[in-house]
Length: 211
Ligand SMILES: C[S@@+](CC[C@H](N)C(=O)[O-])C[C@H]1O[C@@H](n2cnc3c(N)ncnc32)[C@H](O)[C@@H]1O
Image 1: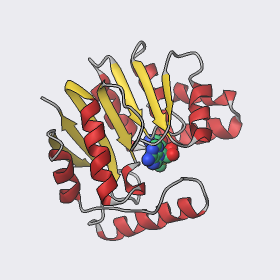
Image 2 (image 1 turned 90 degrees about the vertical axis):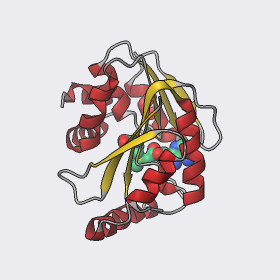
Image 3 (image 1 turned 135 degrees about the horizontal axis):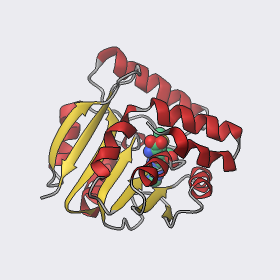
């Protein structure tokens, strides 16, 4: 992983740059997503947080049109600051309500589980609707049926909510097959693989392709 993208966060401060380096270097999802951008002209990252994936994406594929969506103004401001020199579109709001512009690749990493299952299904329909024909929806989610890994994920996520690090109404993990079914119900063809390498969590990567 090219950690030069983390230097963008030195505009915010040394702590922000350190967190960016740790996240970019340690999260296996980013390594998986970047090759999927080859051939894509646009990336919509829903629940983009501080914009780590967008910063890595523009380093990997300069000229890629970037769109970031998040309802946490503080995080979105960090993303804006880090990517100040990149012509990105920022949408501050709730994925359940805002208009999602179409994109070749739509990503949503670690976001769904902050909403109850019915809301997750509605969000999935919105995300799938934003994928251009031939494009992909890439979702990273923790699942509820991986024993101690699922328990560790729920504990960690509840702690981050309690500490106010993330906004959300609880932690709502679902069994892997149920999530796959929910994505397939949007009309996408789904493939799933584990995405927990080097972590104690129950994370999976779900890739939905639109024909
Ligand atoms: C665990 S963070 C993941 C951030 C980013 N995807 C990453 O991989 O670094 C979850 C993000 O989703 C955002 N989020 C959660 N629910 C949301 C919603 N309903 N609408 C918009 N953003 C949401 C949170 O504000 C937070 O920035």
